[in-house]
Image (tube, rainbow, N blue to C red):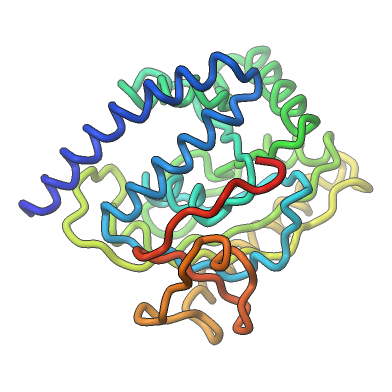
Amino acid sequence: MILGIVRLIVFLLDTALWIPVALVASLADPDARLAYRVARRWAWFNVKLLGTRVFVRGLENLDPAKSYVFMSNHRSNLDVLVLLVALWDFQLRWVAKLELVSIPLFGWALKATKQIIVNRTHHAQAVASLMLAKERIGHGLSIVFFPEGTRSRGEMLPFKKGGFVFAIKTGTPIVPIGISGTAKILPRNGWIVRRGGDVQIVIRPPIPTAKLSLADRDALLAQVERAITACTEGAAGPGAVGANAAAPRTAERAAAPERSGVAALSRNVRPAAPARRA
């Protein structure tokens, strides 16, 4: 418990230091690419701070030169940090609900890194936000949706349809992602990490949407939901790197698919140099 409180204090302090850096970085960059690099290193530091190891399977399915709509299950506040680390080669922008902007420090970081803020109670503003997301896709960025809309307590919540409409209208491939282990480390509505642990992230091949119409929306939603469910159920299956596996020396090596098809980003891994598009 004492260690968890110490970690929380250090997390708040380092976050207070990182955010001004991100704010300054965003002033000279309309797409906030530099500010996002700051946020990415902030996430890497705090994943280490929390004693968490991130194991990734399926990076070989992705091309860092392309844009995607990433969709993932959501059970913990830690999900955002581990995705930042796991998808290191990508410039990610989250679709976040308006209420998050009011959180001290975190809300400033959302604005500094040009995340997509959606007012779910105001249809016109929500549509405008998604149009902004469409513009970001056009600039070579990738968009992240948590289709459940909020953190679940156990089984996944019903998926909201906005992300699927967005993917179809922009013709952007959807990448289903399953995250397992974050809720054990940092439970829903929790802020204190009592002990670290291992997080498994499984990435499925992209699902094309270029030839789909809005009439295909519900079928696409069901397909992605099945894929994410399969990811979470098979996270610890054959081919996963164990907690005691030797970590590669750099995250660049970790991001490259290994023979087992799994990439490991551990507490001993340093962040790689930003990818070409980042």
